[in-house]
Amino acid sequence: MIKVLFLFFFITFSNTITCQNLETDTTLKPYNKALIWRGFNHLWSYNHRINRIGCNVKMNEIKNASSNYYSATGLGSDSTYYTIFYSYIASRHLRFYEGEISLKLSGKETQLLSQSKEISIDLPNWLKKLKKYKSLINGFDLKSEEKSDLPILFDIQIEDPYLIDSNHLRIKINSNWVSNCRSAECSIMKNATHYELKISFLIIGFDDENAIAFDFFNKKSYAWTTDIAPPYEPVQKKLYGQPTKYENSLLGIKSFGFILNEEQWLQELRYEIELTDYDSKDGVGYSKTGMQFLGWKEGMKSKAVSKSKAVFAHKKPGWVSMHLNTTMIQFKEGIIKDSKKEGSMFWKGWNTSADDKRAIDSKHIELNK
Image (cartoon, rainbow, N blue to C red; front, top):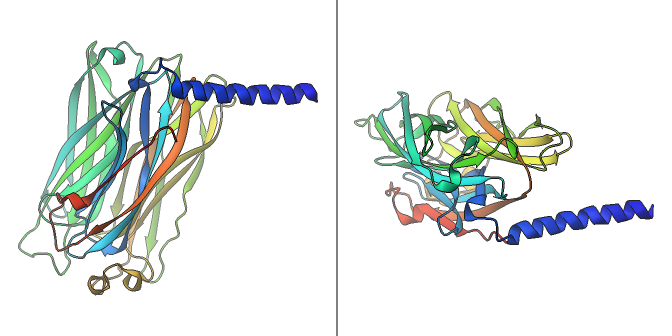
């Protein structure tokens, strides 16, 4: 019994020392650390057209970590309540590269606007000569350039990068957008939609002996009426990786999106992922994937921040099909800390430009906490 207790305390103490050493280890370079975006929860006190929406997490060149949230309604003023989910990763066996791609989604309302953009990255020396490269979405910023519209379809996908030569990597982002505006405040003379979409991405480089990646797919569809709203029910799955070889595992987002029966007002939007109970011996973890689009919530008029504007908010029946696809990366020797940032913002409405600074809420992330 004494031997068993000694072994338990020795293993616990060793793991604690390993984590502490990794956090303070001077051999860890800035490119061995990253924030992994794991989604968000967006809530307005009543439903709106989309003027601006999105969020991301970043660690810039001088390694100042931050979360950034973007929110703006159309005509009606309102507050935004949000949560950003992320993980802090540090490992000498992983190398991280951040970037951003911007797309223009412009065309006629109700028509599918598909945009793809491929960029070439000049590889820094520390990202060269690795066997594998994976990419994750690390956030997005969908911003109206002219007027606010009601969404019908929205989708972002990131393809895995590939080497075009020893010094350059290529990466491609795909996006789809369909919207319409048939609210009373929408002009019947304008049937065009103009949005800018910025996608934050994270490239992860590693060698075969130090890490391995697996992709997983999640879908959810449901309908609602003007009397019954669907409950929030995350999809839970058992994720199978490679057993015995990798002590740690992270989960990131490869693509997400939704398609609605027709244009709908938005009140709440959720995309959340979480990896729990990872067992390195079996290479198995459990994912909880949350997906929800709500066009209305019970009592939204009485609970609205701006009750005078919320008088014009209406319920509308509909259905949605959502997807949220992920990548699980198993890796050797590292630390993972799951966390979140919560906040609230106020937007004055009146179709104010989405470029207004009040549409952005940035918060510092303290990595040592």
